[in-house]
Image 1 (cartoon, rainbow, N blue to C red):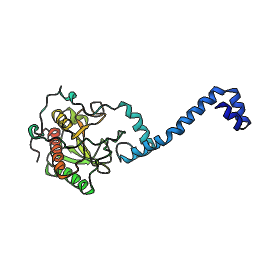
Image 2: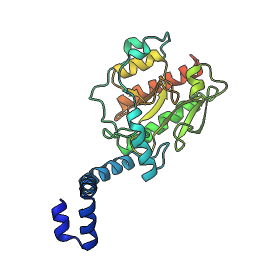
Image 3: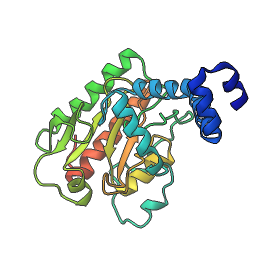
Length: 252
């Protein structure tokens, strides 16, 4: 590398190479690595933007923060963490179905935690949003709607009144929200018993920061339903989340 530079570079560079050959070789090596890596970095940035809006801005700054956070993420699909909790179920365990397809691929970045495939049709996207907010309307005595504190860019369902337990208090009463811009998955907070059921039956997984000071361990991402049959199950999960977060058996 030094020989190549001395034969092609102007006099000033030749002098630099002569005085600091190891430094020049090191800098050249770093530059080569960056040049090779740039396409990968560009693809990673595009993948971040493709995930849509979330807590971080959809720009270089948000991407950089998401990349820095990534090593601190926890695994999302084990359920042993819930065994130490004694909790009720709002889902109705005996007849809760298993999701009949592989889990969707998740985006590498978080935030935002999003699906990278198995995106529902445009018609189904409308049905998902309608279903979510209809549950809020039907249970107006228990819940309200406001901007999401967790992600700031989506409308969220909240507990109406004081949070009834630690999980609700930690997330400031936010029951959940739909990611109504790209994948139409949703984040919901469920009882530990129902979290285990949802994960083991293939309907969702934890947020990588669940179980930290940032989010309660009961915070799950629920995969976007792709047809009416899956939507009916997700509707059931939303109602279970409302029941747990409001500590009510009166959800309709």
